Amino acid sequence: MNEDVKLRKQADDAVNQHFQHVKEDAYFPGYHTAPPVGLLNDPNGWIQWKGRYHLFFQWMPFHTGHGAKLWGHFTSENLVDWQFEPAALTPSDWFDKNGCYSGSAVADEEKLKVFYTGNVKDTQGNRKTYQCSAESRDGVNFDKKGVRIELPEGYTPHFRDPKVWKHDNLWYMVIGAQTIDKIGSAVLFASPDLEEWTHRGILTHAEEEPFEKLGYMWECPDIFKLEDKDIFLFSPQGLVSQGIHYNNQYQCGYTVGHLNYEKSNFSHGEFIELDRGFEFYAPQTTLDDKGRRILIGWMGVPEQNEAAQPTVENGWVHQMTLPRQLALQKGKLYQRPLEEFKQLRTGEAKRLIIDGEYFTSISRTSEVELIGEAEKVSIFDYALLSYNSETGLATLERPSYVDGTKETRSCYLPNGLERLHIFVDHSSLEVFINDGEEVFTARIFAQPGNDSLTINTRNSSQVQIWSLRNDTIHIR
Image 1: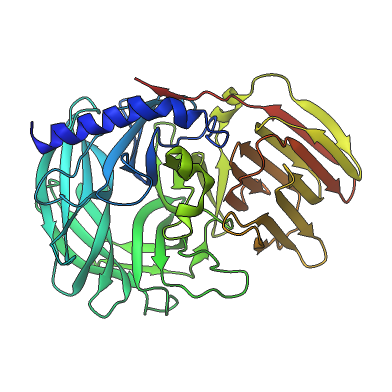
Image 2 (image 1 turned 45 degrees about the vertical axis):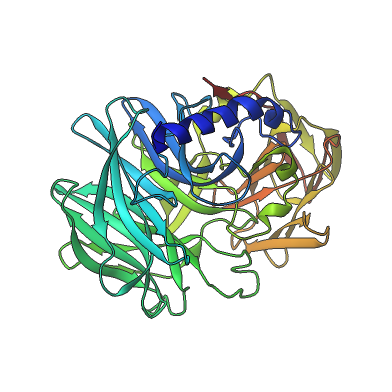
């Protein structure tokens, strides 16, 4: 039995043995994607291909720590129901033996082609990195094609996460990198055929205005167009917290500008945090056949107390965010829930007008929409969202799952608070403010029996509450 077949069988056995136990965990999501066993992190290869959405992800099926990752695989026809597929890639070759790291997918010649980083370490822990490819005719079974790009001069082996797209009959690849001077960077390559790649150089880096001191490594880059602007989305590591900004272990954000393909440079504005919550990292986008730019992210952060999450004792950790539609308004990215999520609703909404305080019980899988100015929203007596109309500050507060101390994340709403759209799913919370102007994403490990919702409004507000489905992940 070769190494690839062996690893696939071991992963299948782990799923078959543990998924029933994992999904019985009170914190396992009802309508978000999560690992059937083990650890999940970065979304990979996010694409709609031949009418079906494919979400690959970094997966460690054998324990809840990091290590030599496989590519796990979900598919969906409606962005609501998700089929768990066999592992797409395993760390079974010389060029990826210590992990099939993050990457992307494109459609070409009736094939689904993926690009990923092969991680290799020697016995002393020294790292080598390769940009590799694999392809599939059915979207499930992949053949590796080997190394496409070796490490160029001028960079450390922290050189990974290729995102590939096509522009004017040429293929382009952006890679997250660290220069030999320990500066976070984005590096561009070009190819006529997805096989031979030319190094075009650094697009932008952490010592370039206005990005000075923006981290020692940039992960999971993504470049796409909205309206007439190019958006560069990436996850810099090494930012120092500044007041209410940059308070997670590692950050994620974007800049708006223009990519000059001929000169291979990116002119851009400031770095803007994409999500204001506790757990959000490594997002990736795709363009679907409806013309929507859809983002999905990892509801986690590397090295941020992962082992302390209470799901670890039940054999799984982390989940994805809901897919979100992106829009660019006045130079700012807005993130919005998809229209498809209405299919999650299990009955009629509870509709009411609130003026003051309101208390009720809700399902652990719920959607809450509030139009008006909410001063406080408490969910399961655990997560507290508050808004100060005098300062314009919105704050999400929760007890730390490490030691129970209160911790907060905040942002300013320059135009005030007009609308909240909240999705609760057992142990996760996604709060969309003012039609996606700001978003808070967080894990919430409230007592399983608590189903309380308390809302305090400043004036008369409209509220709708739906119970949502609890059964959207399916195993073959």
